[in-house]
Length: 261
Image (cartoon, rainbow, N blue to C red; front, side, top):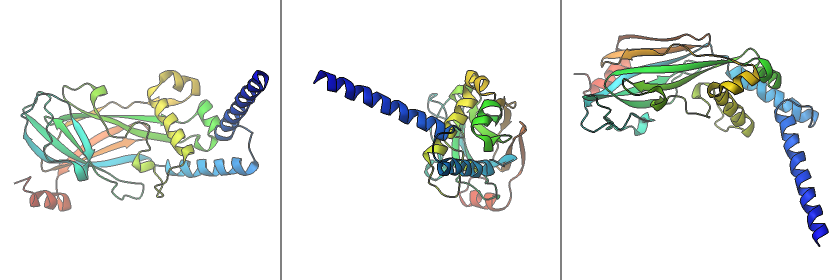
């Protein structure tokens, strides 16, 4: 009985090891797997690479609320815009709080789902990172060679350290601008983006994979009502913010809510 138990355990380990090896070869550029599986993998990578052909990420930011802060410091908050309560309490030592509406645009210039951020005061910084696929990583994911990914890391108010800032792009997730029209995400693409985030955060892993990362200087500005701020992150590493008087549908919408006058 003991002999059969030992054999069964050994067989189970061999099967598990074989399955793990097959996964690595199939999904990390190896030669195992059928020709059909390899072709399907390459087709998937080409589709992802096509979605990465975005030279810049552009977002509009407006102030939708400013009001006195009455609570002690608890840090900033962020939620989808549809569920963000106007003037969410946050504190942070400032005498007032500012709620920002963040609207990014997709590759065709269409607005993506809005996000809202509440900060202490009105002065905020935005950090970004650009990852250029090369080296060993590009060898494993050939269709991505020469492509770049621009990540909007975080937004943090004056007096808050960057690591305590608000995540603009959710960690380990796919930024909306790089998503497919089909909301279903394959496990292969999900795993790939987890590796992309690891490249952004893990210096040792970046060196191992031979990937170049550019961290643009953070941009800082005071967000005031009645102005439209445009944030641009270029894949060449440029991060910029500009502003102009608020006009058109933005101003009309805010006026209906009596936030400007």
